Length: 87
Image (cartoon, rainbow, N blue to C red; front, side, top):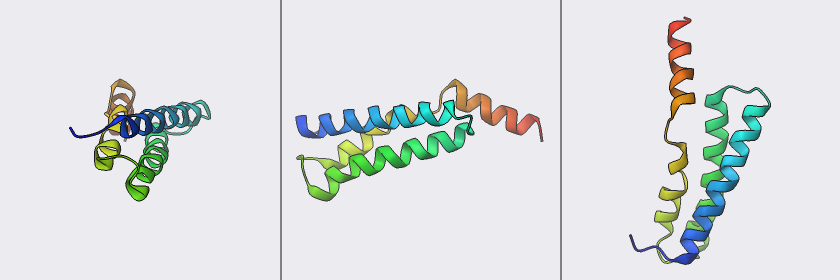
């Protein structure tokens, strides 16, 4: 979509740092929802800097693509199912 190498690089680093934050929060035995929330916050703050400083040609694509790793997978679905079935 109209992004350039700057947008792609920022999105890559934002997603990588967000993934590291998510893994470290899970290692600390926090709830998976909290881990996803903190990872989304960190990723959006980093990729949002592209939008704030207008570093690339299409900063909105940087924000949109950097959080794609947060699409719910098996751990989140299991967390929701356990929460529903245990209450």
